[in-house]
Image 1 (tube, rainbow, N blue to C red):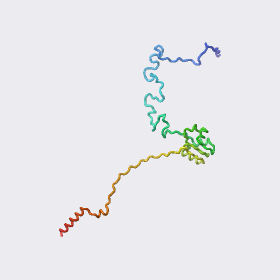
Image 2: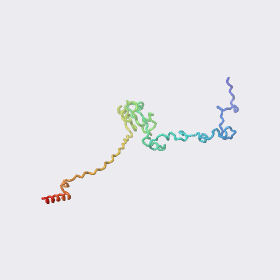
Image 3: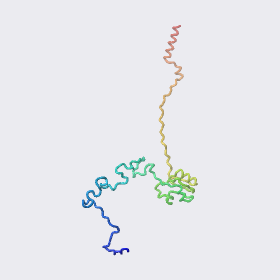
Image 4: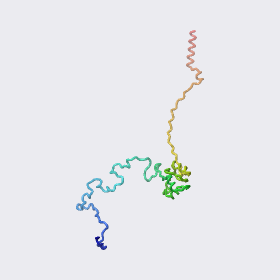
Length: 214
């Protein structure tokens, strides 16, 4: 038979669970936790603060987040988002528009918030082309993928981008100019016809020799 309930009074009060005495260390050799206070001899875990190590601590060796490669650009948390790889957008597929909106509806960023597809308008919205779209919708968003734009327009709707896509210019190296070649100097007919002084001397000697022979 169950024990009869005791009358509740100050002498019968008990805690709901049994109390466990707190381990008191550093109270001398007779306390049962003397000399090393249950920590052993030397080592990291015998030091103060050794049981509150930060997440990712690997005992002093090079942690994994420092061993892995890094992307280019500033990565301090107070500078984010920075750079093209730090831009953020909310992605929505055309199948979500097919599921939520009626045929012929005007889909704007505010309408997406009302339907619960996005939380707020602080982050740009990009429409992606996953799924099927059979309804004629007039969609206005910040960006569209090529597939999403094709599916919206093929269904008879329109896709209006609030941000024009930025065309990335390819860097081309200019070819080094070829070494300038010296132009060939062509002799003019006057130069060819005009005899030089040496030629005149040779011709005069030949005529003198011919006269002497005669």
